[in-house]
Amino acid sequence: MRFASLGSGSKGNATLVEAGDTLVLIDCGFSLRETTRRLAHLGVDPGQLDAILVTHEHSDHCAGVAALSRRHRIPVYLTHGTASSGRCDGSFEQRRFNSEDRFEIGALEVKAVTVPHDALEPCQYRLSWRECSLGVLTDLGCITPHLVESYRACHGLVLEFNHDLPMLEAGPYPPHLKRRVGGDWGHLNNGQAAGFLRQIDAAALHHLVVAHVSENNNTREKAEQALLSVLDSLDRVVWAEQTGGFDWLEIEPERYPPPA
Ligand SMILES: [Zn+2]
Ligand SMILES: [Zn+2]
Image (cartoon, rainbow, N blue to C red; front, side, top):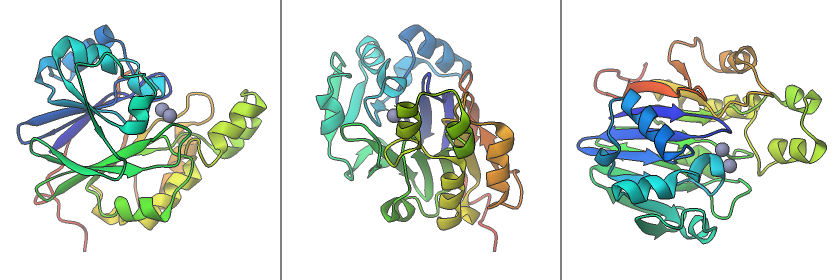
């Protein structure tokens, strides 16, 4: 099982996951042209995609979904709530589900996990193939016990480190936006993300990707400080960039048994 990103942040998100002969894209916040260019950079032709999984209707996640789906006849999986936003209308085909459902796409087992975020029916995903599992968790305002349970002992995790709370509070955003981003239905700050890692079994993690990082309200140093309060080192940590995402990462649990 392997995964990569086309870009991560408030200007656009898209994550590739491949397992066996199945290839899916989670979200597509880029134009068709930009998506095609970024996929090519990762060695992927859009026609190879078996599905597009959508997390929610915010434009940094779904602006490019319908065009990509239509052009290459790719089915789109999304919650009923996300579908009701109309933002993915015009897709080739919509397959609707309820958040918390489990379903299969080819070789991949998909679990849609409900998150607190200011969208109609937002979900994030845990994907499994054989004994490997990958969690994707961005765009949420707080950590719930349900999330800790749902993401326990993943081998790979793409986790939001959106902002540093003091930087957000002192930063350039207007008060209503500070309240939205920092609130329980907004985005995770460094401290919340680090706290989440403390609660799940982070020892099983082979790859931790720091994702959806704010360009205005966070720095790499601040996020690293938070990470080092939980992890012994940053050896397994990868940064998802807005411009280039991150390159393919492989999950092979049999090659990396969890530390005793
Ligand atoms: Zn987002
Ligand atoms: Zn969002």
